[in-house]
Image (cartoon, rainbow, N blue to C red; front, side):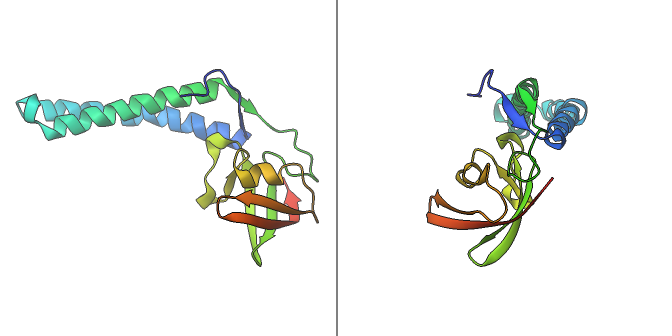
Length: 156
């Protein structure tokens, strides 16, 4: 991971989600993969055993994700000093964009999930909205052009 020893800003809920995922990987998923490997070994010749290859790939992915999560947790900085009237990490905001009202929570990049309404502070939109207040209209350059956001509400 390229962010070695860099602080990762997260909400308290985001840090807990990372810890929960790590715990699940270590206590459940890791052992499920070990069992798949054990069963696949029983199929015989490992050089032509696709089940074994697939289980080894899954094991590699799981171990890599565990290391990534451990690093994120080690470098996590919980952000909880957000001003109530200004967009910052942890803030929920309702904005008007392209004639529609949308609600987002601004979060650190480690917990971003746009489908769940969690907007990364490192994204162009997140960076552009950071520090603004209710009533502000902000034009933000995104890959498809300039988009205008009007901030309708901010809450914690």
